[in-house]
Image 1 (spheres, rainbow, N blue to C red):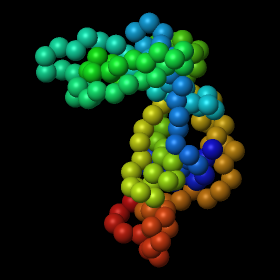
Image 2: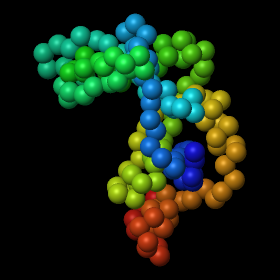
Image 3: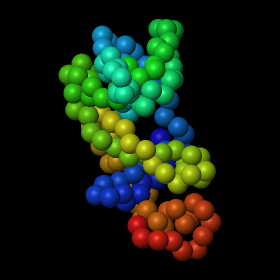
Length: 151
């Protein structure tokens, strides 16, 4: 799953083999996404939008649920609710930084998510490769001999 690790701020960023695909489940006013490895978590909570205040700036998108239903989002589903997810799953969640290798080759930008603490710690502990410096990894990925900028 984890191809490489990079030093990133005070922690690490995970470079993954492939993009994370979530399976979504609705539990009351929560929509919980869990990846196949049961490591990464995405959560949305419902709150009725009010004039001028729309989740994701009112961007419209769909969330396909595991049961075949589709939730049409237009500003009422917000990123969050992770404390409730912890309670429902009985697991501690932590913030993580990641991106898949192909996306990084196109645009060297990482994203954040939450992960089940025990699962992400196991992934980190079983990684035996080099932990790359951020800018050095970017240079390597782009075929340069040296990093550009500060990392």
